[in-house]
Length: 230
Image (cartoon, rainbow, N blue to C red):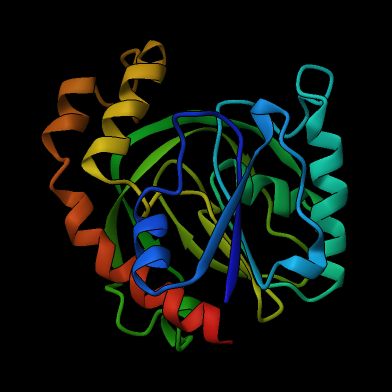
């Protein structure tokens, strides 16, 4: 199995996804787009992970690789490639699938619960997930539901927290992949965003719940196993 990830900044890594893929013995490769690395040939990829980042989907003038990445994702979807998008990755997938991506009414940063939709709870990939799960959020934008997609989750601050389009394309607005180390990197590089607000926790509050990453890992792994075998 050849898994490839697209990374947008040095500090938002696949983290636990990489640990899982390597432990499974997959061919695990990545494109660090911020460093000018090229996108892969689709013929060399069996599944794709699209990571997060502080930029927005409309920032093509600042990040010239965004336009090429969107075109690549359109082709990957057309080719039927399994794709998982996380945070910015989910927003990019939503946009290329015809949804709108806009600034959210409130930023959502920290550990807050999501509520699974009835459709998600009935889906075999998520049937053993609890109806509510506390996850890490770090976003200021949000996406509408792409046409034809199934909504997976919502939170108090954001009406769309995930979607499934077809049987292979998944977007998570939230972060299941974080480890204590990657969480520390995220806090270090983005702590300027941690200003007091209703759905923004302090660095201390976020770090205090770092043990939650270990509780999320089994849900992530079970999802990945089912998604990759689809």
